[in-house]
Image (cartoon, rainbow, N blue to C red; front, top):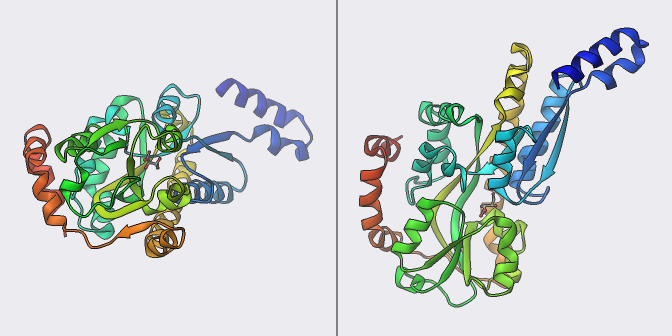
Length: 322
Ligand code: EAX
């Protein structure tokens, strides 16, 4: 890249002016899960639009879809792509400090989650990415997760017993579902629809935005608005990609990242507002009245374990955040 740029710069000086910009234009490749027309696609598209515009076209941003989030993070780490927008699903396997945000029923609502992630608490966790060869740019979101399945209406924690559920490759989520008596089966999102079609698993859990955007209603009949965990997402880049930018361009890069965050969150809010009605229209049975306290109660042993294995003071700070 450095060599290519040096050659490109040399060529730019030698060539007629009109040919120069195309030669000198570095490309930033950004991958995200899910369709272009989704909350993750909206974030990536907003980043591309903003960064290309703010830099007057000196950079080109290429966005690509990849439904295997672990693979995207590995690609960013080794530098075959520059950045990813990924849910925190597999991120804790790279940066363990992130797992604290994956604890069920930690955040009261979107404002609480967004507030904590944008505060110094979120910044401190982003700073931990560096030690793992990653650059944590900004928190975006996937939204509050809900349970769907093809077997039965889930009204209380006992109804979850025995369900084979696809989870993300996330230790915290798996621990929670084991506690509820489900059989958690971790896999990448790219494997989910075939697994549901073939009956390898009975159900899964995801935010409304994901269920809607991927037509999971075609393979799942029942949904319960469990709101059992907030699912953050995060823009992660290869450290060299960010270091290569001048200080001025880095500020524009951050401005573009904030535009991505805004577009992404706005789309999640819109999907959460309209989604239940739409999923019912598509034929899903949706349980909206949920005894949240009963689910929290059923998770008590898991909560006790996380108090021991995670930073208990930080958990308290996050819960008490106003
Ligand atoms: O990033 O894997 C998942 O269930 C994620 O929520 C989804 O791919 C969005």
